[in-house]
Amino acid sequence: MLYELIELADQLQRKKKMPPLCYEKKLINWIIDLSGATPYLKGPFEKGEYRMIEAPIRQRSGQLSENNVKPYLLVDDARYVLGVPENNEPKKIREAQLAHQEYVRLIEEAYDHTNMAELKRVLDFLQSSLKEQFFSSIRPRDIVTFQVNEESLICEHPKIQQFWVQHLEQELASNDKNNCAICRNYAPYVRIFPSVISLFGQRCILTSFKEKAFKSMGKDQTNNAPICFQCATLTVDVFNYLLREDKHHAELYRDKKRETICKLKWLYIGSMIP
Ligand SMILES: [Zn+2]
Image 1 (cartoon, rainbow, N blue to C red):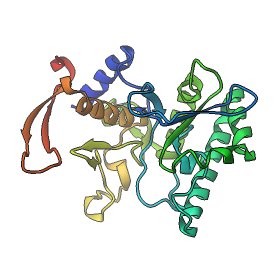
Image 2: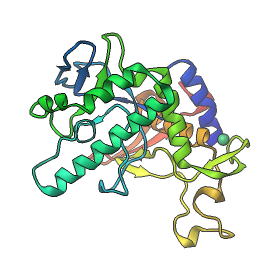
Image 3: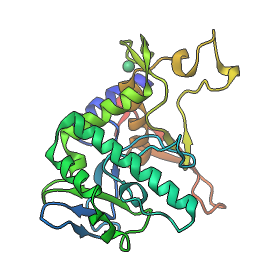
Image 4: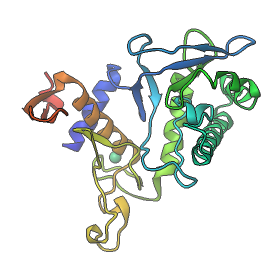
């Protein structure tokens, strides 16, 4: 079944029905336009007022802390993008500082790898006091991104897409190699999945060997069922795509008593796609 998902991913990506690897469709609230001499704020966009963009994504959960800061490259909420705290409590101010610091560091890393002039513009802006003029307009959880020309967003540039995959692979894949359980290629396998499956509003994981009871022959994490980075990412992305798109699943059950919709879904995969 997982191999069917990989084959389907290939078809969907060729038809441009699915975002690039480690990307997702996202609504944004603000664009900071750096095309002119003065930064210009566009927004706020309500749902439907601006197109869904393709934005870098990764698994992110738990309390934001020094050991748990995972910014999304170029498209994130204002705590990360500008360092806007949720309130004036010292804890929240510290969280926003941490988030923003790591967000800038990630863009610096992207700039070192790509040498894109667009990223230099963003870094110059973020390292200046100019950003403070937007603090009163943008709420901490608003999604913000950048552009340096009218036609395109920096996050959608092919060089950025390529860097994001390399960055995540380096962080999440093992130093060790093994035969991928899906494609059989001998490659570094993922220690941590880049993204999670979202089913019935719950975050599900594909494999987990964190608990001692699930370990076998002393093997940790995903070494029990090694999956290469490409397969790990594509299977989760396609699974989420099928769950999202109405024409790719049928609703088998709905709990009418509960306000939250609880659905059982039957997925159409591979040759079964309508
Ligand atoms: Zn593989």
